[in-house]
Picture 1: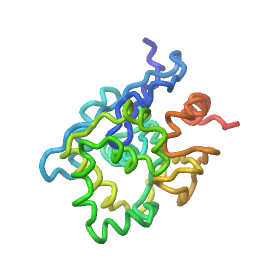
Picture 2 (picture 1 turned 90 degrees about the vertical axis):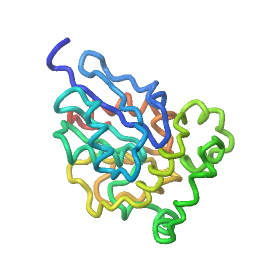
Picture 3 (picture 1 turned 180 degrees about the vertical axis):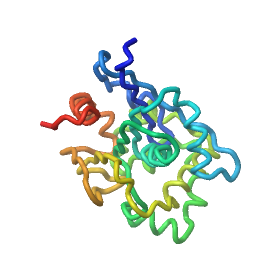
Length: 224
């Protein structure tokens, strides 16, 4: 394979399987794609240590790293550990200040400590928490894409989102966000590529936009 091939690694959203990227097709003449699957955290593991374990599954240098939702937070943490060609954050936040008020309140009240237990074996509730109130008509879809129901993982990952302590955006992070995102309502601080009509699950239902525009973003070409 040509040495000019660009390796693109994807990190899925919270509890999501690699299947959320099944329709993302980048030109094989230029790109090779990989998906980082979720690991089960160890007791009291920090987000920094967890991200360091995720790095062990990145087998190439100078990669493009694309993280969706909670995966976007992990991608930003990974970017602090290794050199990346591009860091792309989708349907996520760049700092704790972009979190919605309900999550900031959960941090203050520590409500996140009692929430996950009720979600572990309830895919409907998990889908609603992960993807927002619009989930009711789409539960069958999320049954396909939500695959991680390990209690320790859910407890840990929800806490990491709500208690993420990043104060300033990483300057090189490219932020792509949907204007109708119900989980992280659109309030990007700083530069942001806004996808018209995009929701929190736009990596799934607006894959055509990503297939058209991701190569341009990676190669620093002008978007249409």
